[in-house]
Length: 191
Image (cartoon, rainbow, N blue to C red; front, side, top):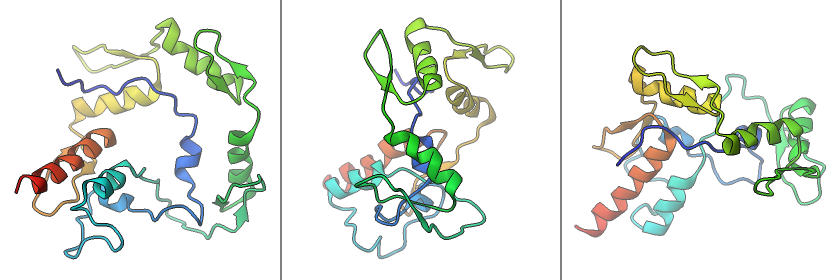
């Protein structure tokens, strides 16, 4: 049975996903949101190779900002190569390196901030404070992120478009698009 709702997951690293360092892999997220692959494919990636296709499908789309100012501020943490547009973004990122002193008594997962632990504990308590307001639905979620994703079922919003030429499938969740992309490898292997 297919489920349209995304599982409750911890989104502690959303800031990291939005900020890409200079030494990060190239960003191909434009192909996850409607742009078709070029006729010659993507330089450096052989999408007919199932391993490389799976790697492509695992790439996280980054949020694109209108003012794409250069990233000139480096993370001072040893071994971290991430770059940032301003000191504020860099300071937010530094929390990811901090000591994880807030530990969940139920499962042992540790967090840098107490607010992240509190949010995580909703998974164990079963509390679901976010409710869908569409008439006749009323589904509830632990995280507001999951409610926002769920609402796309009602609105029909499917922002994640398959990048393969000739395939016009669209998805409400990026995870579903990533699973779908892997079907293209299976299709090529069966030809």
